[in-house]
Length: 112
Image (cartoon, rainbow, N blue to C red):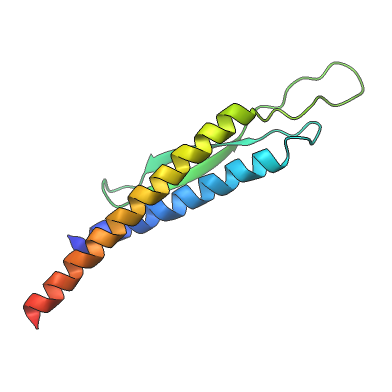
């Protein structure tokens, strides 16, 4: 049980880190004309309870009228909010890893 929780926590850490990196990339390119940020989508791994995965999907390209590309499609308010959510997810996953580590330590102490 503790090893499964440890695995779930680690995959949660990895998914939150990738999502935060994706959000940072979108914010860094806010001044890039024609930039289309990717959207992070979290899914549960199969079988259920074995972790979390992240897929990044590019948004549909906007149709631009005229010869000049449009401004970046990055929404700063959305990306800032997402960054806070991803940080909270990372912190929660770290607590899951910490709890699993403590449980494994207790099991090892009992066996010894």
